Each structure stands twice: as structure tokens, then as C-alpha cells.
Image 1 (cartoon, one colour):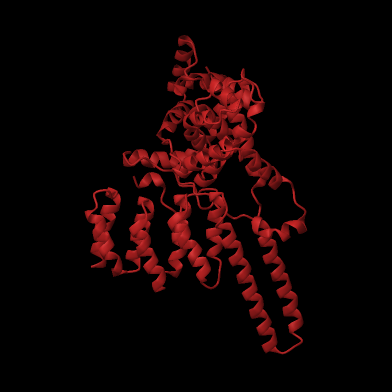
Image 2 (cartoon, rainbow over the protein chains, first blue to last red; image 1 turned 90 degrees about the vertical axis):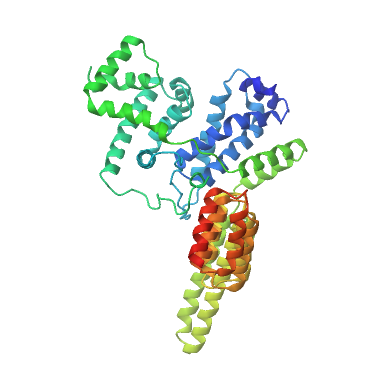
Length: 198
Length: 272
């Protein structure tokens, strides 16, 4: 029954105190949100913490949700803010380096795996604002209008940024193919990734 | 059409939002211009990056949060989290440093500074006295690191626990309390990443018989294939034959993950 309700109806119920409805929204969005953070940070534990923080904030700020607002846009706004706060709070003395190795599905052919690895590394090399717009439009299936609203800019700016992001991605991809070293340290994970043993 | 003109159109094309005639125009350009063509191909190839699944711990944490909310503990939790967000004065932070790992580092720096001055003054005294003071300082520094590591291993956030694990590797001497905490993490931590990191840190103490015994014991109880494989590798590296009976149990257990079984077959060959 609850599964047929729209996100907005569910959130309105959460707002009026029916906390368990947030469970349905969690089911719908925790994996996309996790992937959003994972593609931006390259760090699984941090991404899990941030997803938890988003649902915590949804519950905390439930009264500020307006029924006429698309839930997804509101949620991604919270997700962006949570990430900004995390970036600010990240202690400068911390020398923790994220595990950026991607999990490549075991069914992939060797060539596809190699390409996915390169693509993942290339994605991690492009500037953050471009990566964000690429992740939002390609993986989160957000329309340019939604992204523009989220970032507080014109739709045209988003489209241009997507194009520039692809240009940067192409350049990074070429650099990696020609064997230039990665910018950061520790980008090849020290530990196996869960996807590799399944 | 030129590359400069294609910018926004290409973005719309990629999301399938162009009229047929516009799309045809873009496609024509893509066949003529290698750069733009490659960008469109990369966009498609991004589909190669798989959708990742978070660890099951995330769902448990969410459920715990909802339970708190429904049992009315929410407002309290809420207030507590608000309170913890109020910026604390530096000295107050030091008084409560177990909750603030960063303050632990401040402590470590203070100890170092004290050591420097003591060392300087000790130059005037005998060498033996200076050495004794230096040793004392080292011990205190070690104790501070140990406290930081132990307190970080108990943090809520997985990334902070990972930092805790990395702190343990900076301790000069193996310590029973730290080994106990790491073993507890390997057994019970919600995050498989943290468990694997703890196992890696523990491998430094694997020459001790009690640690090995515990490792074999963990192998019997852990359900995670990732941890099982890491443990098998470690025990094989250590040439620990006491693991063989457990390896054989895995071979016969139908519920054991096939990758783990393969690893076990390999492990038995290595150990025999």
C-alpha cells in the first residue's frame, strides 16, 4: 500500500509524525544517495555516514518540508548541505586517505573492467563541481532544471557545466590511458572491495 | 555545426531531450568531430560503473534511529546532538578530550613539548637521569596514543573508527588492551571495512600464540566472506597449521561462500 504513495505524500506523513513512513523513503533512496556520495568522495564509510546524516536531518527538519515541494529536490538539497558540513568539519590534521578503488562487477569482461577502472579514476580526477553535476545528471537521473534549482544557477549554466565536465573527463581518461601518474596518493585501495567477493 | 555551438545541445542530446531534427544535427557533428564524439561515448560508458550496495549496517543504524524516534527518545537525542554541536572553549575541550579525538592530538603535542624542555634541562644533570626522563616521556606519549586509539575505536562513525585503527599502528609496543580492542573490532564491528583494517593492524601481533588462537576462533564464528578470505590469507602467511581443521570444516559446509571455499582449498595445499 505505502509503496504506491508518492514521495511527497510519504514525506507529508513523516512531517505529521508518522515516522515509519520514512522507512519507505529510505528504501527508495538510500542506495542512490550512497552512490551519489561514493562517486563524489570515493570513500565507503564516509558515504554511509553521510546517508545516515541525510535521513537524520530529514527527520529533524521535517517541519520545514512544504507539501508542494518535490521531495527529491528537497532531499538532495539536504544531501549537499550535509556534505558541505562534512567537508568543513573534516579535521585538517587528519591524514586519513579514502579507499577510492571501485568495485567492478565480477561478470564484466577483463576489458570492460579495465575501462571501468580507468573511468572511475578519471571521474575522481576532474574538479569537484564538474564531478557533482555529472554524477547528478548521469547517475541520479536528475533533470537539468532540478540540478539548476539545487545549485541555484541557470539551466544553461548546468548544461555548459555538463559539457565541460565531459571535456575534463575525456582529458583525464586520456592522461590515464597514456600512463600519467594519479594526482592523489592511495587511490588504489588497500583493502578488497565488497563487490569483489560475492 | 561547430564545437562551440554544440555545448548545451550536446547536454540535451545526452538526456534525450532534443527534437528529432536537432538530434540528427548533433549526431552528424558527433560523427565528424572526434573530440565531441568521444565525449558522447564516455557519457554512455559511464554506465559501466556499477551501482554499489552499502553495508547492511546502514539499514540497522537507520532502524535504530527510527526506533528512538518512535519511542519518544528522539527529542532527547536531538537535544544531545544540538548540544554537542555548540562550539566548546579549548580548555573545556581538553577536560572532555575523550569525546574529542582532536584534543588527544593536542595532548600528544603538549607531551612532546614537555619532553623537549625536560630533555634540555636534563643536559645539565647526569646522562643517566636524562635517559630515565626521556624514557618516562616516551612511555607517557605511548600511553596517550593508546588512549586516543582506544577512544576512537568506540566512535559512532565508521571513518573515525578506521582512524582509530590506524592510530593503533603508531604504538611502539604491542599492548594487551589495544590488541583486545582490535580483536573485538574484528569480531563485532558493523562495517566490514573497519573489521578488515583491524585485522590488518592485528597481523603485526600475529607472532603471539594468544593472538593466533583468537584469529582461528574468529574464523569459526565470522559470517563475512571478506573477513573469512582475509583471515585465511593471514593464517596461511603465518604457516599456522592449527587452522587446517577449520579450513576442512569450511570445505564441507554447503553454506560457505564459493570464493571462500576456493581460498580454503588453496590454503590447505599451502599448509600441507
